Image (cartoon, rainbow, N blue to C red; front, side, top):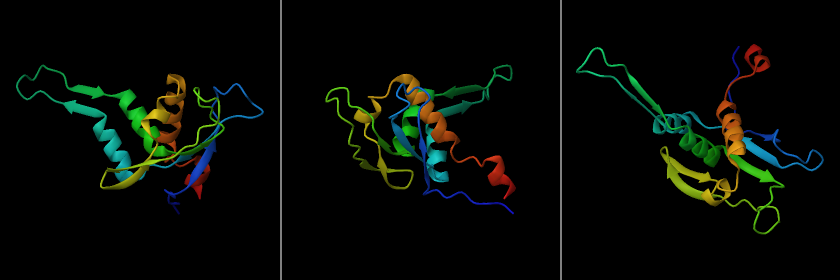
Length: 141
């Protein structure tokens, strides 16, 4: 028997980059629903086949940075203990609301994502984009 995915669930993630193992930043990672995931994937990639010259190769373009930022924008559901570099206080995450992929959605503001170093953006995006995959244990249930 297959087990479905609860798209409203979240899990905690501590970055492998966090130097403070005693008091780390905790990111609350959510799932991307299928419509949202399709929109992100389609918006960040293009595929073109040549119809005029059979010797031309197909062209694929992947906008990885845009995909990472969009995944974080929709997949990050909260965070604890992330310091604002300007105030030296924990960031209070307040979401923006936008219309995307057919409905109104809460998103992380760009100004917050801009605070994340590139390596952290890459890590968070990877965790978010892989979150909807079933683990071996879940697949067996």
